[in-house]
Image (cartoon, rainbow, N blue to C red):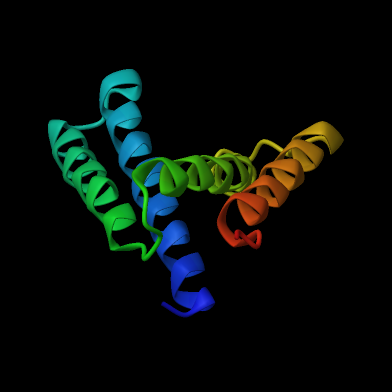
Length: 110
């Protein structure tokens, strides 16, 4: 699978997890209509499916790498959607996670 497709699948999974969770949050914590929760739950099911489309051979490796992508995307979500500006340590932490993702997925293995 081409590198760009791998990256796009991780981004799609991140958007599904964060977006679905956010809709459920809005329903339960902020009094939005019940259908927010239904749509959010459906999107979370999609999140469960998307990582299985990755070409990496093991569940653990895919989900470990996805965790780093999720951290970086959650920082961006907080900035763009919740309007909370990340501080220097948020950016450093997200960058460290993305370096970890790169090592986990693309390090040469013998």
